Amino acid sequence: MTNNRLVALAASVAAAAFLACPAAVQAGGQFNAALIASNCAVCHGPGGNSAGFTPSLDKLTKEEIADNLRKFRSGEKPSTIMRRFAKGFSDAQVDAIAAQLGK
Image 1 (cartoon, rainbow, N blue to C red):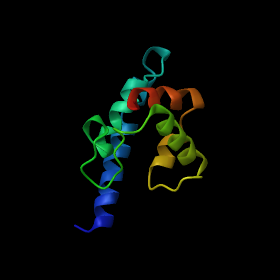
Image 2: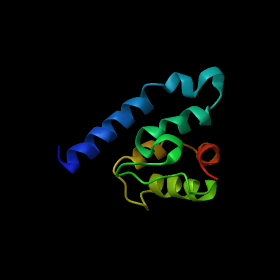
Image 3: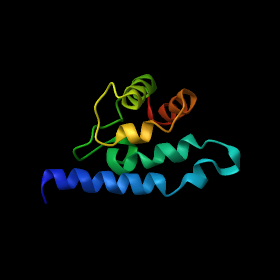
């Protein structure tokens, strides 16, 4: 399998995992940052330690993660799929997700 096909496959799996649980994200009218952050492991590895082609998150601070998400969201930072994910979150939600993932 070529590298491009692996990227496409991983992106598809991540999108499916992320989009499969919108009701749980807003369960009880509350934004569930821990649930969203747990989906990051699909591509970024357990505990944010990627063994593949996606960047590891385990050594990033919550500020670095939030900054990256905002740059993906605005299009300032190029991405394959992260812009699609980040576009759906407010600044407060980005901060909550980053707090779950960062040091």
